[in-house]
Image 1: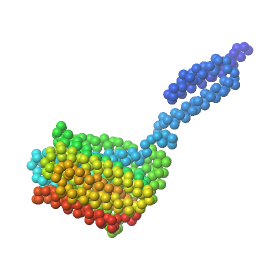
Image 2: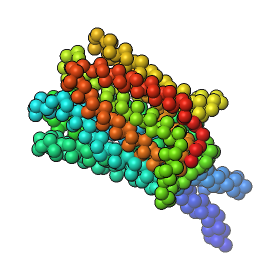
Image 3: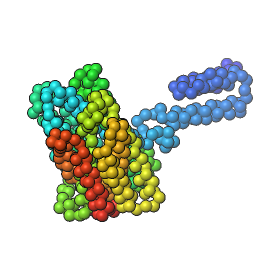
Image 4: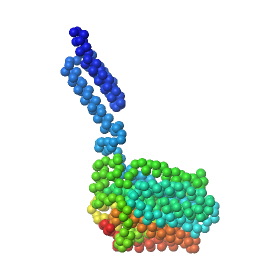
Length: 509
């Protein structure tokens, strides 16, 4: 009987010890630092002579502690494979910010890959004995492919979304970048073909950017998102202009082409993992962020599932032509400065290649900042109650009249420093167009914005080809840049008038 009583008395102790051991294992796994305190407290329950009521109370407390630790284990996000709790998501970076950051990076690479040739063409021309007129042909060969892919790429983006389309484009243009120095050494025909293929691949970048950002950002944040992405685009000019001379002098002609093509592949590996065409399909977005995006849109449109764009209807409205003419003017002036700025500083002010690259890089750096400022200003004006039409007209007027005046003044620049200042002002103010016609496509035709972007971009690309080749012939025939700068300024002024007469921020299609 005494033995039975003794066994009965020892059972709670054994049960308690087993429970304590289990608790020790749980706490060791959670790594919350409670192991020692629980160990001694648990042993005291068995051997400290506590009464039954106190023992039950401490068991209850111990279970409560284990539950709290388990809850903490979950809330700290240690159980992977689920979306997690809403509190954990508050600490995370919003998914739309990740999308726009990756978009800014690829736009930076997009432009850097273009600019490499603008710098590398100087030693290539010296090596092969190319004339100024042929330089214009080489510079414009990128646009030969670009003009065809803009419309097709825009339609593909409308149908399949921007993720896959831009990923394919990056893979192809990185490959073309890698082939460029080999093609230049092989023959001029090979070089022109590779550059045209490069342009064909890059033609999908801007339509993809526009569609993806319109789906991932509410209307009152869209201009800022585009401004941030285009800041990356302009910083690509800076990266290309500064890094290319360094790579040329240290590695050789192949150096910058290998560098930027490799960066494209690295970006591609990151992009394909976590980005979706639509925020609704993203597995990591919080409910609050998704609700913010959807509530900030007048109409949440889905992908255009195979419908043919109404080309005749699109071209029958003057707001469409306002966008087309604005794109023509913007590309005309942009590609003149992009392709010829290093040559301009070398020819007019006799600065060497490395100095010319530095002089050329400064305006693009300021353009990146001013473009983001333009987007923030546009969003602020919309939130303040100004109509979308008025905001688009204000932004575009600054983007055309400012550069026009600056280019006229450039004809009278006497020093490279004064020329640099005027070009910087021209490009900084031209970046306001990003909050003008570049956003207006989504305003008037959200269902066909990619295709409309393709049409207007193709027209703008044709203008860029004419201006890039035309600059070379003007310089060769007249011996100066002045005449072509005056023509470009006049085009800016005429397009500003047309835009203010016929552009609208209301939905047309």
